[in-house]
Image (cartoon, rainbow, N blue to C red; front, side, top):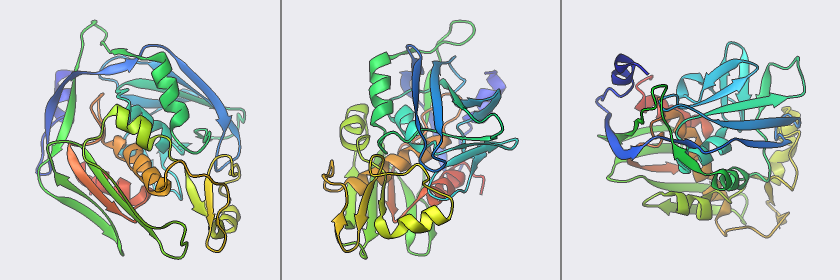
Length: 313
């Protein structure tokens, strides 16, 4: 990364101020390879995570098309986060990016493959619907300090939110407030499904240990009444009771037990971390130092907040 590029990437604005975390950028100590069925297409894909140079950040590699894990390439898509460039789409990236962000893998190449040579889109495997598979793989291989082409280390930068920022749609909102550490408060409201109901989950100081024990284990959820609607829309072809928790308005949870009483709300936090990680640049921290408060949010609204912070909108 050139000096001019670095200065431009970390230029402070009205909304954020970039500062050093006091830590060096990290990458994986070795390669990780995982293969599995995908949620929406139902196809099988293989993901290989490779160590990368400092300053490169996180990016996907699909048939030699490189797509940075950046809000610049995010597009609106139902029920998942999709990155798109030159007609190539990488779908359902949020759980993997959530784990990489929270476990402090600042720079890595994410090589992804599927068996359909004609398909210009690919999807990250869903596994059990949580980020556990990725967290365990990262913990197993370990991390090391990343270096650039000259063997030099790079400090890890982070954005501090300077004034409140909020986005909303109807009765849903996501806001970021100035804070001295990363905090998240999330609320959901499924009054039509009593066993979910209204839930709140909050963390005041996010770290790797808290993430791996309290957030990463939470699984994708949906209501039973939504299933046919999603299938009619060509989604969740690979969905099953093995990779999501499903709740019926009349019968309650179809595949208990839950890992946490408020597992659905915790999973929304997992998704939020993955979506907001798209604020990262050049190996920086993706989550800004702020207290993020969300109510009835989703992938689209999460992305709108990142665009606001990036001053794209």
